[in-house]
Image (cartoon, rainbow, N blue to C red; front, side, top):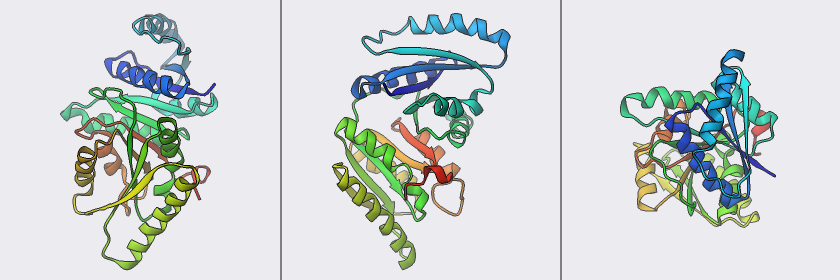
Length: 264
């Protein structure tokens, strides 16, 4: 059975992630794996007791729940362990307090950069609800399409609509690059029977325009590839802004610079 990995640090933030993962697991018929990465062997024993106490706080119903405690670096090893265990998604919580947005957004991105498994990142205020609409961002670079197979997988599980959202470019070559990526995505979605449409928004203040679009269209999840090329729109800063969006919409993302993740 496919499984969803939830990194656990025993804070309220991880509890939000567990609740969201449980909602996903019920819809997608997946199990859940709770993972704590201890700093050393002496902390491992204490963590085992905390893990059992944490699990007892939730009614998982018929969902199968496993737990693992490993020793290592929490942020560096989550992705490696998820890949090793063959996890389908990682659901991770991040703090949304205004003064801590940059810090905790950066923590989440550190996990993204070290993972081949797609991350669903939720804020403390995020409440699970079935996904009806997903907004996926498309830019000039082909890497921006790498989240497509994960976003379309979610769309199929939930019978959701997928909105492809890009920026309006006045430069003919840039516009052609965006439309080429849009066309490739449309062909894939059509082939896989996923309902979709295309929207082009003003590039001036694109992140704010995107969130306004999500609010106006009752979007339930954001999807964006992450890649470390600041010449393009989807830099660390852009993806971090999506992680901490004011609507508390969860974001699904993946590191797209590895050739193993290339969609085409």
